[in-house]
Image (cartoon, rainbow, N blue to C red; front, side, top):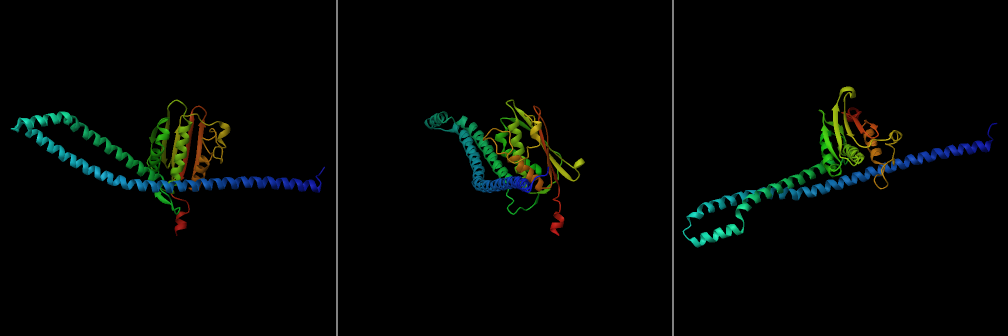
Amino acid sequence: MSPTQPESELISLQRANEELLALNQSLRSAQDQLLQSERLASIGQLAAGVAHEINNPIGYVFSNFGTLEAYLERLFEMLEAYEQAEPALADNAIADRLAALRERVELDYLKQDIPMLMGESKEGLSRVRKIVQDLKDFSRVDTHQEWVWASLHQGIDSTLNIVANEIKYRADVKREYGDLPDIECLPSELNQVFLNLLVNAAHAIGPQRGLIVVRSGYGGNSGDKVWVEVEDNGSGIAPEHLARIFDPFFTTKPVGRGTGLGLSLAYGIVQKHHGRIDVRSEPGRGSCFRVTLPVRRPGAEGAAS
């Protein structure tokens, strides 16, 4: 029995409503990803500005520290000369006063401790300087969305330093880098991809200390492409979740621990670079995410001519 006209209209309306709901969901997802992307860009601009502001005082503190080291070296030379001349003093009272002063200020200890303190302070300054540089490299804002030739290894290393505090208590990191050419890309966006993969790998590690391996390679079966893998020996991903991990808002983390946008955003960035992101996982054994990217942006030559 065929449906009557009102029933047919009702079925058509239901289908149209379902299509509108699906379209609305897609638009919401796209809007949320765009907002997240803009938010990350704003954070990147803020981080770059803060790094620049910190870098200037660090520069002159580092310079002044070098000058202070030179002054102390001269001062120690002068002290040594005084010590050598001390036995020749004819006035015993002055000699006794100098000996008492030497003991009171613990001069021998100071001569050993001051260079050690200076060395540790200089090392600390160097580390702060490196962190600031890594922050600048990580958050380099592609203001006009200009594609540039960049080193993936430099981006990964900067990102690893940025997320070091997130990882260091959970896992060791092993780098297995191949020889990679520079690729044409948006570096700060790819750094965001690596950050998401590394943080997810760290969060997948259980109570026992784990291992995160970062590998890279070029060519082979990939052709004129490079690939980067982030592998962990954590909890793995359940088979029923694998097909959904790149869906917006999908997360297996507890409430408040994740938005479900990290991998979705990473997927979008990789797609934007005409690449692909694949995952293999085994529950209880860990997961491995592989990002494959072309060396040159497809259509770049045609766009430039």
